[in-house]
Length: 558
Ligand code: PEP
Ligand code: MG
Image (cartoon, rainbow, N blue to C red; front, side, top):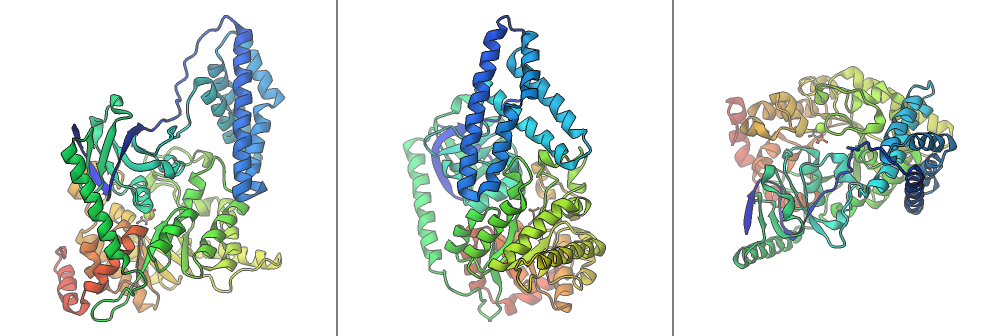
């Protein structure tokens, strides 16, 4: 039995075979081949297999999202057998180079050619040719793309997982996560919590390749993982899992009950999600609505910009499935740790402070307009609210709202139905926005505080850096004081304020949030009922003076 200690970031106990995440190999060895005819045949066989894979993907996309979604894969099929592309490959193979290396060369040549064209559409084809070439290289080298090639569900191990990798995983195959690196505020940890999958991160080099396939139990609360557990450990953790189930059953009795304190203060408890499929978990856990739909995960899950139709289908599904409950869809928040190749963003030394979120949307309005058109079209199918992330200035909000107005008018001229009222809100996740919240409150219909970023930017602590330990302290009085400023400014201007960062689910702060008059907490679906129980146990009048006084005294209330 081997005990591995890390940090628990998503509670729960899970056991299963340990499986190492396979990342597509990028290192290609260049070798000389003597039999060029055989090498050409290898290429042709791999090309045919890749075209077959693309056909399957096109069919799947067609069934799930319609003809337009299938088009991307069909375009890739055509590219894979484009005569110019094939001739370039043939020529280099005739020169005696192995097919994998040839494809790397041809991939770069064609990608550069597309990227240097004037037309934006043709420039975007650079990503396609890279993708097609990589698919054929994967077939040649026997690489399974970022997948879980297992018939049974597994405990997934990786050095670290980028959000784009996590989002593309087949969730039905994952019982738990265990990673060498990572931080509790990273989007991968957030996704694990949203999916309700136990996760342990930061185990460093304690995981060894020879452990693959062996039984492992992960405890996402204590951050412990046990490989080859003995009978006593297995029994202890099985009992803990049974205990968790009993607790869930008790919490289930709170379904349908109100989020009201003993002295009558009410608060909304909504959910954070990132995929239309997450709606089931919201309804199961009785969330009042969706307080944060991280729309960027639609972009992270594919190889090219999702079209207006694809986005419309996703937003419409969320809104209709929520059956009239409010849904806050946050506009695109890429950049920082959520990098997407096909955006072609320049390398930045410090991307968390670079071009991300609304900054990208305002600099590349064609991307933003596509999303806004899809959102407004979907607004006819439910109670939509639109929210902009990463705001620092009033002018940004005005410019974003102007684009919303233009899109609405455009759709009206086309005769497309939209909801009459689509409230617009912003995330307060930079100190600038918090400090300017008196002015910003006059521009929008609601605020939602993103405490993950607000903590990072206020304390100058990178949320991705787990080494900062106690310096990264979301309970810091500076963060809580900013929340108070925001809440006061929102209420003075008659608009509601919520919290949708991970702090919203922190039961140690529920009383403080109630005392501040926060109107809505948005949390991972499985955190709704524990939070409801905490709210129902609280008497705000009894604690308000002490908690708010502690903030004024410059001491953390905890
Ligand atoms: C936040 O910053 O608190 C937030 C909710 O947004 P994200 O975690 O997606 O950056
Ligand atoms: Mg944020």
